[in-house]
Image 1 (cartoon, rainbow, N blue to C red):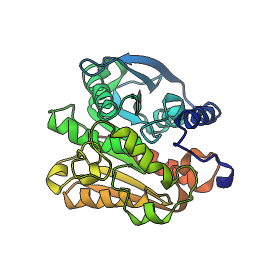
Image 2: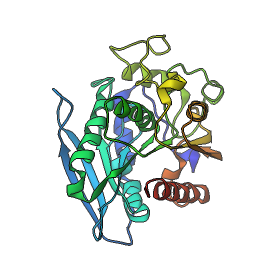
Image 3: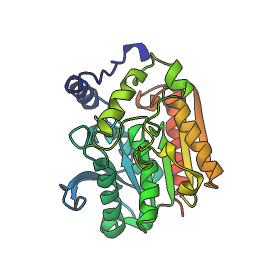
Length: 306
């Protein structure tokens, strides 16, 4: 199955985006066992920037406010959108009993750092201010991000703490893209892997950091590449679940970041899946994918229970 997956080639970004959109359009739709409310929203954007598109998923029948989960998609900062995460968002709303706010943040290189992060923060502010109108318990907010979205989620926890809220009580970092230096063993030694190949990482970071810094240079901001954080930058952040995959170039930067969180005193759980590739849970019907999804649902439910 892995061998049949198309390889990304960010050297032709237009073609890569077209291929990603085609894959997203053909992903199976999760059939929920309970009625769900799914609503497309336009959220006020950052100052001077366009509004942010989002999609809100919630159990249609609920007797009380539910925890809110901001969901940030992957795609190397340059691809991805709401269609990519529609099925897992539905599953989270159904099985974890949360209100999911999926964010369609702006993409690089057209909108380089910090556009995606600021869009994510704007969505979090909306969830904190107006989420109650959509059944969200605004005292129980978490963020989940996959791949590039995991890097944005990690940065968002620092940004919202520095800006004085809204308060996050949990962060879920799935194969987070957090290190622009690209010098980990997994990034150097795993050149040909399913879904994401290391040859794309320099291109991705170059697009994301365009106009801010050169990838690998000493002046890359910590909010762009959270792996550059010092212990003091991470102290007091919300409890974390960090997920890594054995056959994945981003494996070691995620594990290294989890260690930084632990050293900073952040309660951190780590899940490393042997023999699995980058975000393998998107492939339906596999034993390991089912285990990953079950683990995620359990963690979200437990960590956002309040």
